Image (cartoon, rainbow, N blue to C red; front, top):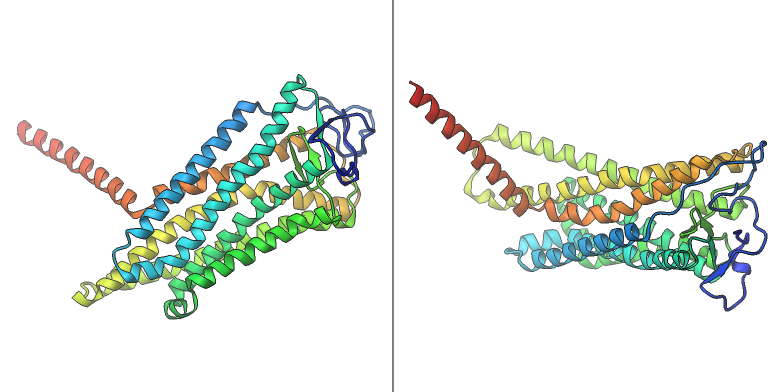
Length: 383
């Protein structure tokens, strides 16, 4: 049950899966053998088995249905915009949101289908560990990198668009157009795609990861310069995108807060300021959605990105970090958390729309009114 060191060395027309037979290098053995370096006592203890196929199917189906529902709502909300001002103000943000939801949808369907294939083969062989063939593992790894990095970059673009729209509205209306929003999506997707396909042209490599149901950039043992550079680039770009989003959202939130305090100080507004009120309401809606998306992305992605960055940096610049079975479990937990980010994103958009929030507030206010009415009535009867 061992895996070859370099999947690209497989035959030119490999099957999707092959039984493990070749000797495996340190760092890529699973599920119960030790990657490099082997402990001094010669044992490292068993690792838990892979998640059941039912859990993977449920996550994939839930993510796909959630993103499809959010895309339908997004299309309807765009067509129902009543004023030209609202349509123009929302178009770039809606385009970026649609690109994010489409990426999340594809990120569930494509890698999920590849993972289910590995689960099915594992069940067929009664749990025997299989090694994904070279081409299959390379494609799987490329999908993991692309669909992992692209949503983070798009989230940064959404934060920048809202920050510019709130802090510099005149510049935003002149510079941020639907065409430029589409170009931004294409550019950021191209960056993620470039990083993902580099191992396909022999710059770095993708290797099977514990418990043998997914492929990614190698993280164990002594890494080649290209492998370490790719893994650090993936983690650094993801962390930079999250940090940039947090900075932009913080700036936008502070500006909206100052604006709200000024409006309270002014008191009543003239009748001609209806468009300004509509703009503020629109900004609050989009900032609420974007702030929640950024927060969830940080919680879901930071554990995986930070752990990969620290371990790769230590392995490449200092003494080799001894292998610990617990690290495999932490990586798998980080992967599951990152996959749930693509499930939660559409629900954030669905639940934080103004119509939903307004209905919830109305129900809460009606309940409060009903409670106060009954309490006043009871006090009156007692008197």
